[in-house]
Image (cartoon, rainbow, N blue to C red; front, side, top):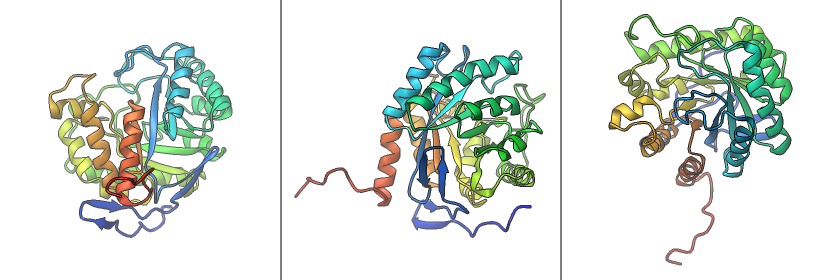
Length: 309
């Protein structure tokens, strides 16, 4: 089903990769983004009591809504709302997950035109979230639910297809092994994109994510990051979900809570290598970093130019 691959990525300057996207201009809810000239910042709102980074700081509804609105005010293009963390843990019924995410989505949609995604692997949750105002389904399990693609196809929503190999919320029976991790990621994403296309999701509503740290060790994740242009060459906007992850901590010897600098560095490298969305916890700092990337590339003019004038 997939059309011919996009032509190879072009170098704007040594070290910069400019992706050749099938559909660079995307309308996501009430916003339109030209990914040929924009690095979107996706803010993270976890309405979970056990999220790995904020440890439940936005579990309460009022705190989750306030944090989402604040992220939009700080310049986030996008807010990603999740009710269940990716890591293994006890089962949460779909009805409970819906109760966690839908009120946040509905209230945020009423207060802001920011792009809203729901972080879920369940088709039933995705459907309820779309009805509440979500514009994107961020499926970190790469369409593990057989009904997910059809739910997205029957709506106006976009799907983020992510590489991961274990069943949802379960641990791999043994440490992950890949003969060629990046080739495996690209092959998986190509197959799952075909699955989405077969279900009726148009190319213009597909985004891909190589799944930093998801069923990968730190060495795997660093290699995928270095070889991100191979994922970019699929021709779909690439999401890099790198914020505060363990590969950052293990690369630098930094515990959780001390990974901001490393996260900003790898988000910037990912943007240089062709990623067009970065998923980040620290919104203001991440927005500044990506706007600076855009200014350096010449996509945005400085807000002022007084130095030496």
